[in-house]
Image (tube, rainbow, N blue to C red; front, side, top):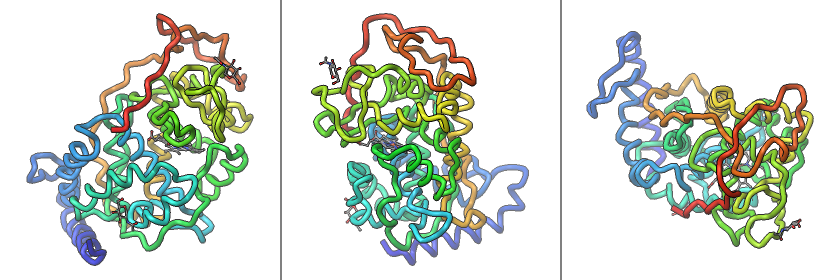
Length: 362
Ligand code: HEM
Ligand SMILES: *[C@@H]1O[C@H](CO)[C@@H](O)[C@H](O)[C@H]1NC(C)=O
Ligand SMILES: *[C@@H]1O[C@H](CO)[C@@H](O)[C@H](O)[C@H]1NC(C)=O
């Protein structure tokens, strides 16, 4: 694929958007495919979304690819500093310069989603790498009940270079190191915890490579606040062979992985109340996640030059809360680190203590 072609496509789209913007101020445009959107330039995305759902997300599943497309969007965008001197941010460099960026330690395992996205990216052909990576993340999470419809802005230019190493936080990092890195990219602690809502649809392949697909919470296919609860439950075991690995701490449930960084953030005075306040607060969680993602997904971009295509993003099925303690757990196991607000009252799932199955590879 030639970058010139991409530039021409984006340029044409921008020109078109200026022409039609007055006409669509009060009503949308009807696309050839039947859907309506505020901006004609966004029509091209509807068939691309179909392609993503069938060819990347196994017919609109909240599975491994949807999860890791979200992780990819983060690892791409965070290669950025508000002080300059790092990468281009949300520019798709992780996809376009994948040989360089997949070699970084913090990106271990990310080659799987790159291998899955690459042929679809080639087939689509008309999106820049940045638009592709960040559209895929937005579409993928709508396969998970409870997820918000993220903003999507179209028109990122092709990435110019790979991001440098050491921009992506690691689970072995201290809270100070994590908050410092995020602050360098422009995010405050509130936004960091909001972004970590993503770990409600997450699993680890590489922390303990002997048990790939080990989920971070008991509802890995639902965008709920369960992970914020389960990270606080007293840990008793390591999933798999009951051996610890770097970045992993004791987990409360068989088959569940707890990241050291998630636990540290849940206990640290700077973030404990932000963490706890997410529990069973679906509305707060998705609102804050959406706002923080809106910032993340255009990091390093000139937003004024992008076209707002947010209305093409599908809507997820709703999550019908409340969340519950996993079977056999109660407030008695909560390692409460925030006392400024009361701990939410929650029921417990009936039955014996669960053993979580791994997330299948695809
Ligand atoms: C403190 C910052 C963070 C750390 C240390 C961290 C660390 C990790 C680690 C170690 C994994 C498991 C990777 C593997 O072994 O396969 C993971 C998975 C994941 N992370 Fe994070 N993460 C952080 C923040 C974020 C953010 C901000 C997002 C998105 C906005 C995110 C989204 C995900 C997702 C969706 C997965 C699951 C991928 C899958 O199931 O395939 N993470 N994270
Ligand atoms: C990126 O990944 C794809 C699929 O693994 C590969 O075919 C392609 O050559 C890679 N590109 C670079 C620049 O490494
Ligand atoms: C697993 O390891 C932990 C920590 O080393 C230990 O306390 C626990 O008893 C072990 N559990 C089992 C079932 O072996």
